[in-house]
Image 1 (cartoon, helix red, strand yellow):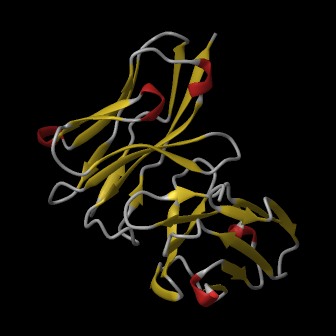
Image 2 (image 1 turned 90 degrees about the horizontal axis):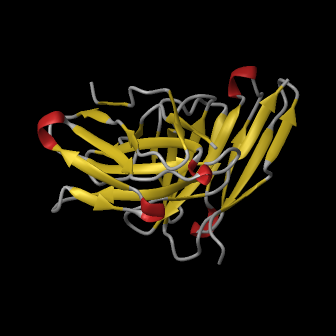
Length: 115
Length: 111
């Protein structure tokens, strides 16, 4: 069955430290890949997306993600975390670029930032 | 246009009552989606409109749920005879082709 996993339910980092959030997917072919961020009580905001080409994708707010086909992974990174980055982060995949019911979100990783 | 708007932000209702939520997408976006998000989970797809046509419905969308998008503009999601299990955040999103823009959601609490 198709699935998206985010192995870390909750991560805590200190402000200024680097960050990596993990995402793995299980699909037959390379899907379209996304990272979204959700602040408490808010909707989701798109951070970045990968469709094809360069496997290192730059997004907003200083985030980047790297697609690794061999590992079926699309990990999100940031070199220096700010307190305002504390939020819930969701990896999502769309296997057929249809934005329909096959567009699947992972369970999310909650990021806490220590001052 | 400031984005996708959802109304109300919060709704508390008694079990068995009907509720209706509204979503106003970005005006030039022809696709509109409804998602449901429960605590600690990612959003789950409910249904999707291309203009006024409802093209896909999830198995999650029981007979008590109905969605409309008259004239391809705003959309409504109605839940009839609410149950406690309906308590969740209901998110609306729109897109022209790729890349959702989400609203802030309507949080439903069924007591």
